[in-house]
Image 1 (cartoon, helix red, strand yellow):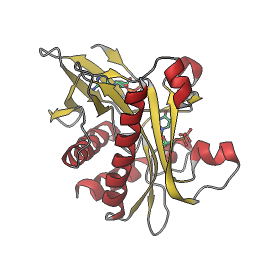
Image 2 (tube, protein in one colour):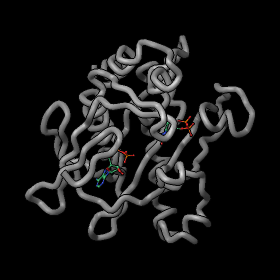
Image 3 (tube, protein in one colour):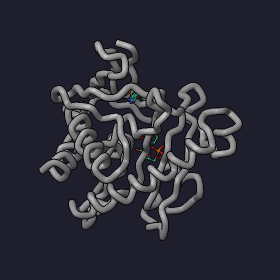
Length: 230
Ligand code: ADP
Ligand code: UDP
């Protein structure tokens, strides 16, 4: 094992350019302050992530996905993670609503993008592109590529979820560099990292059920798996 994070473990393989990711049921929120278990989450997030990565790949977004090995294990291309959490929003919610003093549920005319500096000790602070350049987290060209790929990902995912009666509220992406410097989409796309609202009832079908103690957490993850994979 090379690394154990809050939701996944990362292992080396015989191929130096390939890693094995294992998805756990552990859940955390508020920068690790709240801890718990969501039974079956690891298997759901593994399958959901791989499904979305394969769709995105077909639509022209390069990803780290290589091969699903089992319920909870996937091979991915090893990348050097760009230490930015890239957040796209279509509807106001979460920290956006709190920061700007607006209600949740305002549908934006255009999606927004923001970056957080991926640094647990600092609590992942909000950062702008100039700060990211000053801190040498990425080059200007890499930031442009990341923005383009993040908005493209949003267009593909928004349409995909709309067809499944789900509003894609917001989500977090991580990008990384392959050995040759190519920027690819990495990490995961799941109910842990996206806000999903049922299009009709506006019921929350994501990690907010855990964060906010809304109950039926496992049911929400299972429902999203069903809508995505059928
Ligand atoms: P965290 O580190 O935030 O607790 P996880 O438990 O999800 O998150 O751990 C997975 C770690 O693996 C994250 O730090 C993520 O940035 C990293 N990662 C994701 N995809 C890749 C990849 N293809 N190559 C290298 N590291 C990756
Ligand atoms: N998000 C994430 N990891 C983080 C922070 C945010 O996956 O460390 C996701 C979160 O699930 C939501 C989106 O990014 O879909 C926007 O989160 P927000 O900034 O509103 O923060 P939160 O309300 O989660 O504190």
